Length: 312
Ligand SMILES: [Zn+2]
Image 1: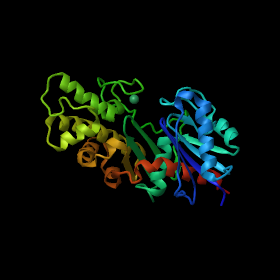
Image 2: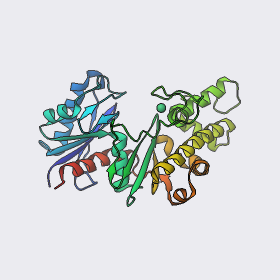
Image 3: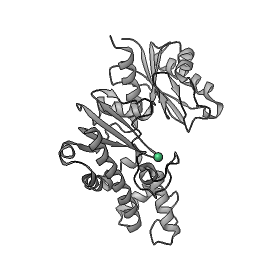
């Protein structure tokens, strides 16, 4: 078997692993700190070194997930918010030159969604939507085994759909989109605003006031925390309803740190989906938690390496 390496590049760490099968990798995962502040050349060269380390020599192929919008065909990264200098960067060519082998490149959320489709919650589905809810909201859409890329190569940005014309700005500056309301950032901001307005809550004085602290308060019955989560879940559910109408998916998997608060989200999401979705596709669409957790990025990169370099 050719020595194929998957790399999950993040703003703080790089993980690289040798593929041992279509969706599996060697037990030994190479981890390195991302030298983000040192610029793109340093980051790319750290990725190449991690890949060689994982392969025990020059790999036969690498697939890498990038935390930002990417054109998989040209290999250019448009931007990566946590990686200074990754702007219009020909990252695939740079990594290929540094590592001495062919490279496939994709957006990290897309690869995580691909992983959920081949080896996680979306196994066996034809049409599958993956939504990852953390600091921001990302996603992937897979139709008959094909990752939807789109002409601008940034398709499947399911976090950036309109929810509320008067809503807060998301990380990209869109007023009232889903990410501004239902991401970890949006949830924390809504709670902070209610506290600043003088509302009573056990959250007062809690630092950091983040989505997991708010989830804990909601479970303890705190009305403000419960309302903030209910608002986020309703926005998510209505957006999922729209996804059902557009794609008719067999399943929607929810991942990420906020997405793991299933007990608070699942029922209100399902209820809000019914506000928007057509009955027949809604009945056929499973909604559930993603199965691979933080492993999804690396599984996706390994699987994408196999898919890219083992064809024909
Ligand atoms: Zn947005």
